[in-house]
Image (cartoon, rainbow, N blue to C red; front, side, top):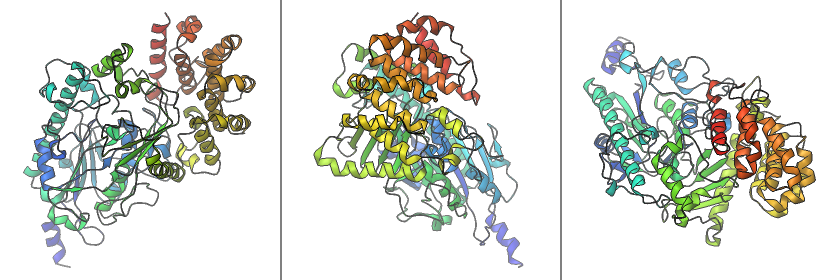
Length: 615
């Protein structure tokens, strides 16, 4: 055994694994809110020399997706290897209990002897199950590790974040005239300026990446370290960020694996190469474990695509949209790399629901103004209209995803295949997003949404069957929805009421007695949509009763935050019909009970908007 100290000395900073093989350092350089708008991906407007050089030494992934088109649920999926739709953490922002008996993946790395640092953003929607990092702060750095210890380090740049678009103190560095405006955006000066500013942010994030890479090189660790560069989701521009299209989910992913660790490379890896393999953020946790020589636990829902425990490529990537801050929604998407299928479970809601944060971006405001002035073409105007239940796009012929092929007979087989993939995925991961958020908290009290969703008391089949029937808008389904109103599960009844509401005035008129009965349901997630349906479509005699129900539920001092928020969203959706609520809106409280401080801003935002509309 006299050779062992010498071997360790030769390994430098790397400890031997249990099998005697050297373990790599792993460096993640991450950025925010930008898609593959980089030189190495062929973007001619981009200025990204540092990541381009990394790509020349490593490999880019052409079909990499986030799982969520917004940061907190995306990062939650990233840190766990579990879909946020499975853990109940898909809402933006939220905080839910962590699944029992599981860990965030840096904890598994630390248990195996890695020094794990995060500099500095976390933003998870799951409560951490104990200490996750050796250090997580603006001072966290791999340099602080003990001698002869492998590291896993994350450095995150915020310089490409959406907020960069909100205020402008100077002209953009990139030429707005050279910016590519996607087909869904109007070609207005403000839009071009925002796209130019967006490219400025990507360049600034690239510069941060360059500093990290230079530091690694100067420390003599470049050949001992596997490097990832990626973003948390797609562009921060409106209709990219927050939307689970390819435009909101496709990310740049550049990976360099030094020759020393060539055994950990995937098939076909070469310097300057490209991979068409489908990978997404849910795969990153098992992949890092695999690179470190740790077999990923069976409970992880992602697949390792590098390292000793690589799995066969997955055939589909999955995306999702839940509540976005103060606005409610439920969307699921899937791609096979060419086609993108989008399933809208709340198709009566317009795409462009007013969201306080998104309206700080000039593009959003000018886009809305042009819509109100009637100056948009059909592709641009679609954002301001209700959604179809299903969407299908061919990225090969329609990279901006504006030509919906869902009704195309020539694409029926493709749509059916992707729809089945989406439904199978939801059943496999036990998607808990079909339970209203407040109801989900109530049911999982004392455990976690994940544990409830994987238990015997989650009637997933009945809930999803009703949600599918409700949201496809087939008028022949109304009798079945009436029957579902008698189901013992409130989530089933919730979807039954929504299904009646989404079909409009005729269905509501035919269901008046049932909806009046639903106003007395024991669950607020049934009473609120019933009141909204009656207030919007029922006879004049029912409107005042329905509005009274909504205002009673909007009182945050007497209801939980989820009930108050749902009621205020319902009031908002009524438009002018909500005018009689004006006096009550002025007196509703802006504080109340919630499970975490993350939820405290949403009710006040809705009240502010409604009070401005109904002074």
